[in-house]
Figure 1 (spheres, helix red, strand yellow):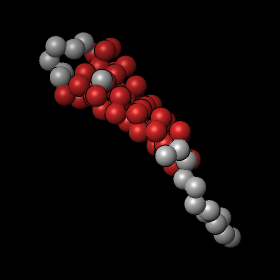
Figure 2 (cartoon, helix red, strand yellow):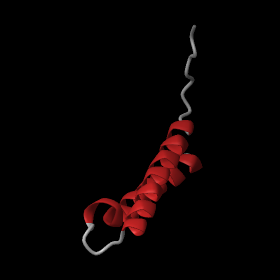
Figure 3 (cartoon, helix red, strand yellow):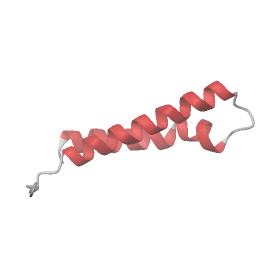
Figure 4 (cartoon, helix red, strand yellow):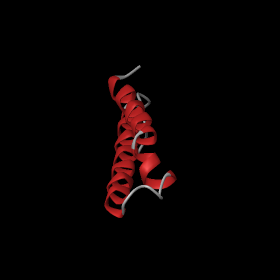
Length: 65
């Protein structure tokens, strides 16, 4: 596997393991700032993981016009 793909998958695992609980699941014991920061971190990790996994594809993509 490509290193970028492994890092991207690791970021997805971290994104859904750590901040997902505080941003979406457990809202009773968490204040607003913690929930907001956790949600922003969740979105950032998912997006960064997607960029790394998508950028690691070895296939040649044609950019046709």
